[in-house]
Structures are given as structure tokens and as C-alpha cells.
Amino acid sequence: MCASFLIRSHFRSTLSKNAVLRRDITERQSHIIIRLLRTCVNVRKRGYIHSVGQYHNTGFRFNFYNSFSLSTRALTKLKVVLGIETSCDDTGAAIVNEHGHIIAEELHSQTATHNETGGIIPNVAKDLHTQNVETVVQRTLESANMRLQDLDAIAVTVKPGLIMSLRVGLHHAQKLAHMSNLQLIPIHHMEAHALTARMIGRIDFPFLVLLASGGHCLLAIARDIDDFLLLGTSLDTAPGEAYDKTARELNLIKMPQFCGMSGGAAIEHMAKYGDHMAFPRLHVMAQSASCNFSFTGIKMATRRQILAEYSKSGLPPDELLPNVADICAWFQYNVIYHLARRLQRAFIFVENAELIGDIKTLVVSGGVASNSYIRANLQHICSLYNYTLVCPPQKLCTDNGIMIAWNGIEKMLSGRNYLQSADSLDVVARAPFGVDISKSVTNTSIKLSKLKLLGEK
Image 1 (cartoon, rainbow, N blue to C red):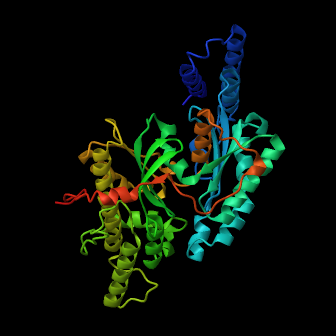
Image 2 (cartoon, one colour):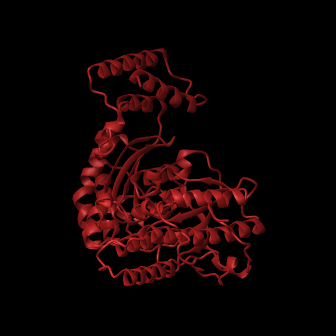
Image 3 (cartoon, rainbow, N blue to C red):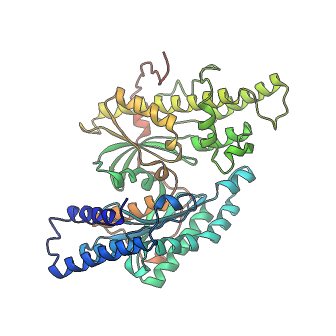
């Protein structure tokens, strides 16, 4: 696509969103922009502009309208925030403006390292964050062609998460704040996940949100950027952890095609070739009238099934079972069925309590939400209850700096006092998410009708 077309499109988009407030662009400024467009076209002709896709798998991203973006920012005075994320095992940084435009981003994943060690070891995660956070942030600034002084604030995850990992991100943010005299915006990791979809399109409060990841699973009502009602949460294992441990039990991470992949991604791939009805369906927390989750039962039942299959086959435990695809499909089916039943109860409770208006939206985020099989079934359930399903793009479902920067933008634009001095912040390993009303859900004793997932007769 022609560079001049892309740049003009970006300029038109920027001006259209600011048309009412930004009508004071002078004749002189217009000439500057025209000269800038011509310069960018000349740069393209000299071979300096490359497609983003060329660098997609290298971790480097080149924004071919960076200089233009900075010029338009000077004219429109958009707020710009740097986000830093180190709550678990991904080192992420991103710069986002108040229109939700991702100016630059970088991400260093530790997945391959932790696959080799059989899980996340906090000390190892901390060391890898320490090795990479400065480089990740610096590359983000360079990709954006920006200095610290061009930012309006720095947003950083401070809770919840692995305490040592969180400290690495906060300490680096504090260092940058001291260097630039910028203030920090403390970010709750799960709140950032919950609101990421608002960066992609307009989603008005209140809405229902399901967060499902390697460390969390919760159902809540988002009423404002810092106002949530918790309907239910995981009582034990998170779904992402159950996926990863099951993948290790099945030896999937030893397969060359899954090298560097998460356990969840490996199971999703294998499940496409299996029969989810190969074994009887599990009935997890069937007697509980709550919206709480439990994935330990699914994980342990799957482990027992795996051991039984090894016993029947006579294979050593380090080899791949012949029916591994069936086990993956069965495991994944039980996960989504459990999620679906909890969602079903949440839909009914919210309707009866009149907690959401006529516009019914379910936002799903977190690493598990990037699973296409789970998304498809969630879409099916939403259609049964007249909800609109909204999922961020897959790369925004997993941990990243973009969601942290966007949450910082939302807090800054709210007009409330979220900005804090660098030395006033500390990290918290465990932090509540909103106001817990899960007992109110249980006390209503909602009975559920039968539910059929996609593909069931």
C-alpha cells in the first residue's frame, strides 16, 4: 500500500476525531504537513520504509508514520502514556495515545524458558525481567521516535502478580520518572485486562466481564474504570494453569511443533483432531448455585484419565498417547462447559437484579480468551441470552504493555487524581478485584436449564 495514502489516512482519522475542538490549524501548519507528506513519500522511494509484517516475528516493529504522528500530536495535543507490564512472565512496554492508537509496543516472552523448567519459577522470571525491561522500554521509545519528555505519564502494573516480577517493573518505572520528572499511574493488572476492549471500540458502562488467564478466573460487572462488582472467582486453580499442567502431563511441549508454545495453545491445536465425547462429561460444582469456578477438579480428573490411558496402552509415561487428541478435546470441552454454566447463572442474576441495562455486553479477556474454541462457544452462549460478545484481538488478551498504557490513559482522562509521585508506590502480590457480591449470587439459588454447546445434539 502506498505510504502517502497510509499517512493521509492516518491524518484524516486524527483530524476527524478532533474536528470540533481542533479547528485552529493555520495555513502555515497545513503547509508544514504537506511538506512532511512529500518527505515521507521520498523516504519510501529511497527504500527506508518497510511493511510492519516484515518484522512481525522478530519482535521489532517499525511505525512508518512516527514522525508524522509526532507532528499531528503537536497540533492536537493528544495525551500519551507509556505502559510497563511485568506482573508474571512477560516483559511488555507500549506507548498509547488517548484515541487508543498504539504508537509503539515491545514484548519479551519467557514462555520457552518456563516450558523447559516445567513451570514459572519466580526467581527465574524476576531475573529475565531484570535482563530485558530496560531494552524493551528503550526499543518502544525508539520505535515511537519519542523521548521520555514527550510522554504525559508512565503507567506501571503494581498489583496483583508475582511480587519479585512486579518490583522489577516498578523500579524501572521509578527510575524513568526520576529521570524525566514524570508522575506514575499505578495499575491493577486485572482491571487493565477488563478494560482493554474499550480501546478497540466504544463499550459503555456497565458491562459484564469474564477474565480467564493463567493466574486468574473471574466474572464481574464493570461499572466504571475503577468500579467493579465481583460475581465469582476461581476457588483454586486458574484455567490457564490447568491447561499448562495438562499439556505437560500429555508431553505436548516435547513435540517439535509446539516448541515455545504455551500449553493452552498446544492443547487447542491437538483438540481440533479429537473427539470431546470420547469420555463422560465432568460435572464440576454442579451442586453449587454460585458463579465461582474450580478447575482443580478438571485438572485432576484429566490426570487420572491420562494415567489410565498409559496403563491400558503399556507405553512409558514420556511417550505420546495414541489418543492424545481425544484427551485434549475432552479436557477443553469440560473447561468451556464449566465456564458456560457460570456465565449462564451470571446472565440470569444480572437480569433479575437489573444491574445492566438494555445494552447487554460481555467482554472476555485474558490468555484463555485467545482460544478460538472457547470464543466460539462463548459467542453461542451470548446469542442465547441476547448478549453481544466483545473480545480484544488475541495479542491483547495475553499480558502486554498496551493494556497497561491504555488503562493509564483512561485514568488520566477521568480527571480523578490517579497520578502519583514515583517514591510513593509499592507492589502488592494479592489484591481484591472490586466489591465481592458472590454470596448474593449464591443466595438467590438460581436453577439452570440444560445447556448445549456447539456441536452437541
